[in-house]
Picture 1 (spheres, rainbow, N blue to C red):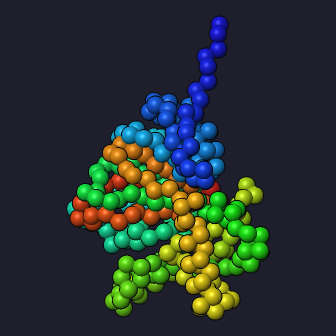
Picture 2 (cartoon, rainbow, N blue to C red):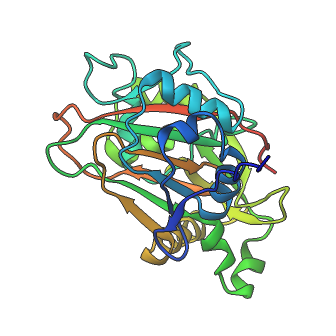
Length: 278
């Protein structure tokens, strides 16, 4: 009897520092034939693109479950509709405005999600790319003296800080409502169990502890500018049916500008976190 050949991960690099395309057919993905290799590639490359795979909601959940622990949405649903269309998502349209700015999901949690998976269902009439940047690669490329400068620094994160990105003069009631969610102190440099290090940045980061306000702003803006520079970034131009997943522990992301009235729709599933913030 001749042993069957093992299924191999079909992949191609998108940019030198971030992003790979996975080209295996749907059925190989759904049966988990390359799940271990996908997990390894995700940690290495930060963002994986599965072009025009056209998963249904059930298939998207099933594929997510091959990769780790599936994390249901707060609403108890398997798939979250990422859209500003209030008919489709009446409760989260305001919250999603913050997604237009660089962020890491889960900075208010003890353990952030491991990864998010998005499937495109409806395109924007214009714009609507999703941008990603590798904070692993950005940290690793910093000069040694800058690594020494930021080692050990702590940063205060809060959801309310992100409000000022899209609404510079919010109502006091709105601000207090956001502040009620709380704040969280996190390391600027996340030391992972793997031995690698990444930067924890984004629109929820608003104050470096132990330095002046001016120095705090300089550090956070400077590192964000560095991490989101072209050498560490990838902008995905969606086609209907694309699936994109990213490593939330070492990747910032944002929705790029688009027609907010277009009904742009993505379906999201998530992998539960496996590592607390150090």
